[in-house]
Length: 232
Image (cartoon, rainbow, N blue to C red; front, side, top):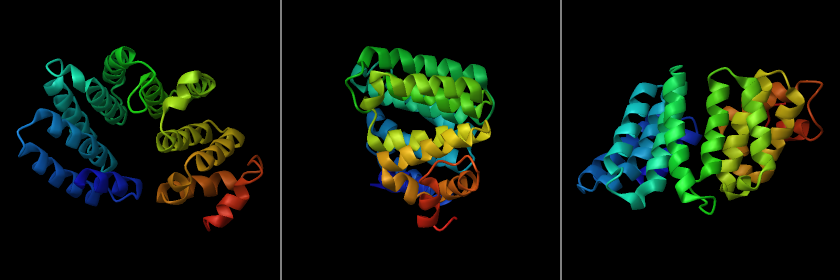
């Protein structure tokens, strides 16, 4: 429950409160003396730390938790892969490109064993993380090319709707940074169609929508979305 609360608070840009909830969840998990339970609690903790700007702590926490359950617990591959992805995303904010690539390669190796049938952690989730990482590291052109290849493939549908929508918001930011406001707008509308709440209930999205909607290149429909969110 603490973990779920922390994830919701991250979406609402309440980083400090998210960290507090995740930290309490970790205390409960550690008391069980079960590394797998502690690893589950580490996922929202890492996200909360990253949201609060504590990227080094977010990376190290996730890596340590992943190492503790690998390879002694082969049934925890999906969890270990998720933690490695979280660590990689935290490392992007520190500009540690080599570390990011190594962590994502490790996650991809695990995902390859799991296959595409899992709707949690799978090759598509790693590929989506690579797109976000490339954009965060400044290689927006490569990120957008990788994104278009991802959504054109069959693996895309295995990501849960909320994951797809949150990811599309990151891609929309990448398009906006590249100056392609038409695609940024289309991606924002796609995110809303995929999971409405990810767009309507996340405060950070409003500024992006406002910027893109003011552009002459904005697609039809984005102005209406901006008006609905009162950012027009």
